Length: 276
Image (cartoon, rainbow, N blue to C red):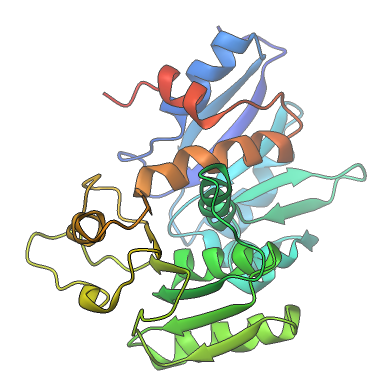
């Protein structure tokens, strides 16, 4: 039930047809008795900079979830951003500060790291290989650096993206050893596929799985299929792994905390979600 006291969370992106967040947040809000609602709002790129400012003029606005294609644009529209957002170069959540300022953060990577930790994986001091230096790869790299990993190796065929992310990591996390240019998974504690490889049936694997150790943890971001070819290969080798949708559900408790709502667990959100 939406009333005059309901807090609005704008879900801003374009197009809106594939939005999943309302199908997870709103059942949770209803079950928990939280007077809030996530509302999809389709906003084309040309209109977005002015619309973001206007939507936060609403008296009942509480925050915004930001999705494609606006995550990068949002960074220049905010008053304050987190280190995670600065390293990622993108933002996917905005709220009002006490003086009306717009505060942004990035939680894609936080969901990935929380999933690792809840599975009992050691993150502090770990060595990590990330294939993909785009938006999601950058966010995961930022959160892993923040969580205290010792080494991050980046690989992306887009050399400029890879090098730029490497420099941002070195600037904000000088104690993390950052290397670029190789996708050889040999010797890493954690390897992450942050590319679209696995979306299509005949995609090549992002790593040479023959070089994976059974002790390596394999993370996936592709959500189209739960057990992507990479994860099937990792499972056959005896590796522990994390499916793409884990990152989605694990980041929502972090969003709830950011917005000042009572938080919950990924399992509870999965039990309530209306994803069909």
